[in-house]
Length: 143
Image 1 (cartoon, rainbow, N blue to C red):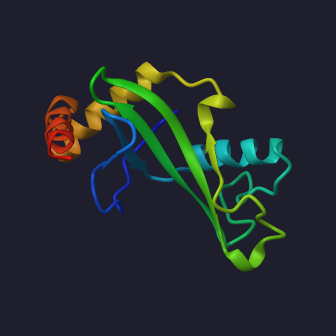
Image 2: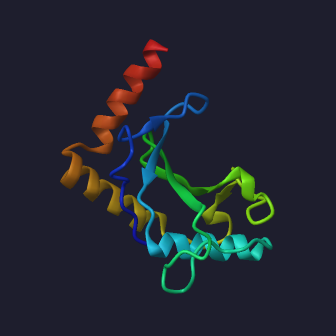
């Protein structure tokens, strides 16, 4: 599974206040992630948002993907997606606002994803998990 950090995210990562050392990175939606999310939702009895080509079936729905990382032990905690839909279309998207954990449904190679994250942090943001860990520790000390 390929991951790319979101270009649209307001911040590079978000500190999970309730879980010391854990941060969330928003991931860019890709056809591969959308396909996985659609398959998971279909298993749960819901309509997919995209067809096999990646084209919209339902234009008022999308997914927000997140990678939860423990920066203290440099490990992937989970990959999740949130279902986003127009509130007026409750019949089409009854799970609007619901979160699914991809790794509860699909086997993922956490080591590979961590390597992708580390490479992208270095290449695109000129930082590392060690640098982010320092920032998180400072944040947690202040709060």
